[in-house]
Length: 458
Image (cartoon, rainbow, N blue to C red; front, side):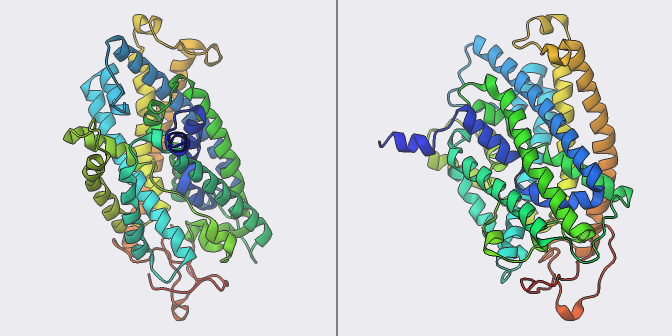
C-alpha cells in the first residue's frame, strides 16, 4: 500500500495522464480572455478562428510528435540512455537539424515559456482579486509568485498526475460556470455587439486565439513522460476537441450576454456578480515553468542530479524573472495576443512545420522515416503542402498582421496605465466614474451595477 498510494497520485505516464496534461495546459488561463477576443472579432469570426486554429494546432503537435519519435529512435539506436534525462524540443532540433536550429528553437521556446508562466501568474492574481478585492492585483501577484515557487519540487511531467487532473477539473468547472452564469444573467440592458469594428482589435483577437491553441510548447516534455509516446498524436487531437467543447460555449455565451462591455474587461470574471459558485472557479498554475526548470538545470549541470532538494534549490532563480515580469506587465488579455503573435507563431507553428520539411527533405530520409505520413493527409506531398500553408498563413496573418495589432494595443496599455500599474482594469472610485468610449480596451471601465464591485484606484 505504501508504494501504491504514491504511484496513484505521483507517478503518471499513461495515455490518460498525457490527455489530462494536454487538455488542462492547452487552454488554462486563456479561457478567461476568449469572450474578450469575441468582442474584438465578432461572433462568427470568433467561432471560425477557434475551429481553424484548433485544427492547425493539432497538426503542428502531430509534427512535433513525429520529430520526437524520429529523434529518440535514432538516439536509442546509438545506445543513448535517457533514463535520467528529459528530452526537450531544442534537443530534438539539434539532433535532427544541427546547432543553428537548436539555438533558434531554444531562444523562441524559452522566451515563450517564460512569458507563458508570466501570463499564468497574472491570471491567478486577476482571478483572486475578483474573489477578494481587499488587496490589489499587484499584491496578489506577490503572493502567487511565492506560491509559484513551490513548483520547483515537482521533478517532471511524470509527477503531474494529480496536478493535471485537478487543473482539468477546475478548467472544466470554470468554463461551464461562465457559460451557465452568463445565460442565466441574460443580456445587459442596451447590449451591443459591434465587433469587428477596427482592424487592430480584429487581429488582436485573432492572435489571442492563435495563442490559445498554441499551448503545445511543452509537447515534447509530456511525450517524454509517457510510457508509450507513439500514442501521443491521437491524444492531442482528442484533447483539442475536448477543449473546443469548453471554449466555444463560454466565449459565445459571455459575449452574447455582455457584448461590447468586454472590450474593457479582458477577464470575464469581472462582469459577473460575486457568488459562491464564481469564487470556486480557479485556474491552476505550474505547467509552463517546468520545462524552463529543465533548461536551467541542463545549463548549470544539475539536470541528472538525483537529489530532489538540490534540484529544487537550483530551480529557484527561474521563478524570479517570472515574478518580476508579471509585476511590470500586468496587462492580462493584451499580453496574451502579443506573446501569441511574436513567440507562439514561431515556436509552435512555423518552426515545427519547417523542421519537418527540412528533416525529411531528402528521398533517403523519407524512405527511412520511423513513421510515414498517413494516406489521409496525402502522404509526403500532402504533408508538405499543409506545412507550407501553415508557414505562410502564420507568418502573414499571425506574425504580420497579428504582430502589428497586438503591439499597437500593448503599447497603448503602457501609455495609458504605465508599467508596474497597481491594479489593471480595476473599478475606479464611484466619484471618479465617467463612462469611457470603447477603444483599444485601454481605458478603465465604469463599475457595473453589482454589489461586488468594491472600488480601488488603479
